[in-house]
Image (cartoon, rainbow, N blue to C red; front, top):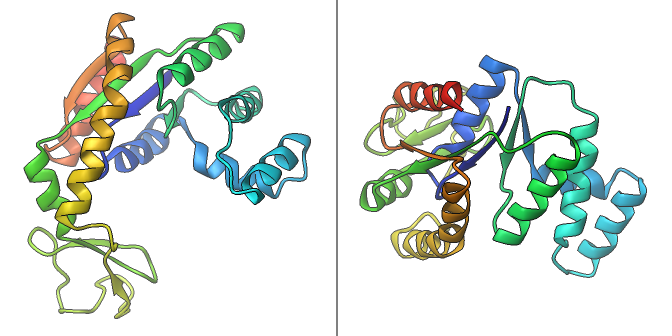
Length: 215
């Protein structure tokens, strides 16, 4: 089962991907993680990645596809979740070609749909513990003691500098511009399904499971 999760920042893609990894034995392939690992791997591909990043250039689609191929050939798992890829039509086509050459396909593309206003409220109220990573929210999940992490007792609570309304709405607009062609592409190929990402986490997980069973 090869799955692509598509959704704007804060839609909960990471949370749901972790559940699929834990509950179904799937593997989450993050392009960011792969690039960081490749940069220090010493392999031929890793050297190419390091050289590009040291020049301050964007890593080409060819390199990313090469890294994905390396990962897929070494995997023994019940499925793969693609995280952060594809982002463009050319990347989607390249991924399809790669999988086809390996006797595989993209089995499902799940769009995590959101209400923009509710998403902005969700994210602008979010803060995390800088020590243990626990996530909180001003309204829905405040700390029991103001300024102190419930889990580890740290007072190192942080907010992302770009978790403000203006920045978020710009990120949402960029997301919609970037992904609308992808959604059309996968819809035309009969792969696209949507879930309400604003529902409770368990409800979203159940909807995703139902879409995977139907794929």
